[in-house]
Length: 277
Image (cartoon, rainbow, N blue to C red; front, side, top):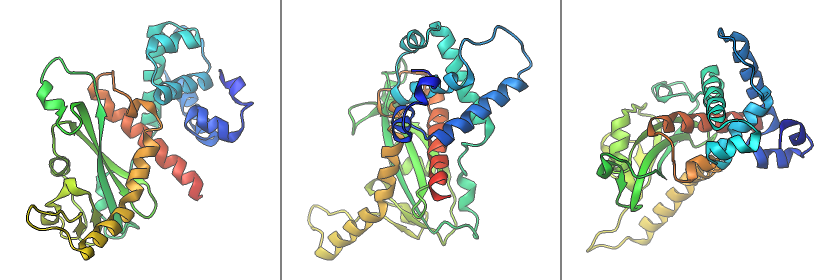
């Protein structure tokens, strides 16, 4: 299905097929067209128009086929399909429209953020040829990359991300990311962030039962209320994993995973801003 055929779909079906709304798609097309004008090198023009190049890239992120299948689907060579996707991703990231606010926003005392929720998600990867133990997750029982997301509880917007190998503990990843926060901000984490109160006093994590002591009714109620306050971060992960490249086994080079994750997170933020405006 090319862009001309896609325009016949309803707004709801367009979103289901591409993973983005029509307004977001049009902004992406503007970015790719502007980037093409600024290109210094001249060469053979692409078989695909900018609209179809965006559609191919979204199809790759949304469905995560191989580049061979993507090339056959669009009538181009496998290597050409690879170049189109990489070039389009670079243009979208370079534009700044889909950039995340970054961790510096947590230092500011006059921002609108009151409560920050954070969580870690694991993404399966191909078994590495080297340093396999470094990426092996004892929890998932396969090799993974971990992604940490910090979001504004009030707006559900993603503020910043961090990444590490599957063996890294959630709390260790937080310390490794070196995120300093204003003391007034409240931080909500899950059981993987036990001990975070020593770093940021205004933090809440679930209470854990011990071998000799069970949780009281008041403590169980506290955990349930905290879970309700943190549910927004679970919804965010679900929205990101609509793009199958984040929910399937990642086959590409690991060094590009963070760029693609941040691009999808930026698209999520942009779509969120369209709803609020």
